[in-house]
Image 1 (spheres, helix red, strand yellow):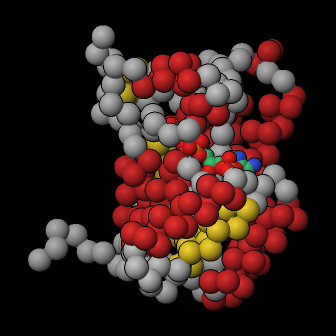
Image 2 (image 1 turned 90 degrees about the vertical axis):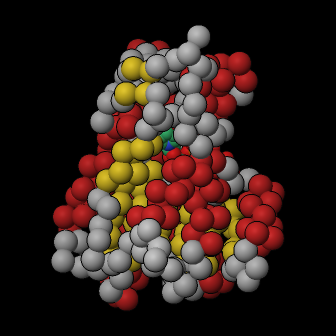
Length: 263
Ligand code: NAP
């Protein structure tokens, strides 16, 4: 007797953005382990190829495509999707994961360039991707859309206005989409992680290693695998079960404001 059921994903092709690192990379590995064919997307193609090789080594017979994409490029997104579909079949799972925060500046000091980048990667790309994959999912009558939002979307903090607003937008977008798709067999899932130790902080602080370590000091953060486990669990539920929204926090954090740090 298994402690809980696992529905395999042998009939699925999962498209994962931001698969060159962190949560996206971990999710690609877990979904491949469940039998899904996986199409990896991100800008660093060398890293994508490493992820592909790692999955193929860990899971004999896994079918993986590594295709470079910059999610801020609308035409590039369409090409990525078409190339992935030609290689491994129609998209039945979309994991909209690529995302970033830039700095901790307060609103008055936030540059327009940073505003545009964060909104374009975290929000605009999600809209574009969903618009691209939805017609196929509707025609085939089945699909899953997973958004990597954040606890920051519902608990905004000082010095994170653009990032928090982008994740709130994603949460609202997911709710609207879920309402539009009610009664269909297309599920919409939002994952709201808390502190996850990935390259996220390094990107946020422009490569400053000391600053990037600070958020995790004195506590045990989540790992990318912890979050990927939740995605894999949700996607492997029977199709009548929709894990609408999952808040995944480190045990030592309460939302975005309170942390129990050991000094
Ligand atoms: P990460 O390790 O920095 O990975 C981010 C991924 O996004 C990378 O693969 C990066 O690939 C990709 N990416 C960034 N800009 C891109 C672009 N323009 N085009 C294509 N790909 C792009 O961060 P992570 O922690 O795994 O973050 C994944 C998601 O989880 C994000 O949406 C993030 O907001 C969310 N999240 C993270 C945390 C956390 O504490 N880490 C908490 C809550 C939510 P390339 O650089 O190769 O393009």
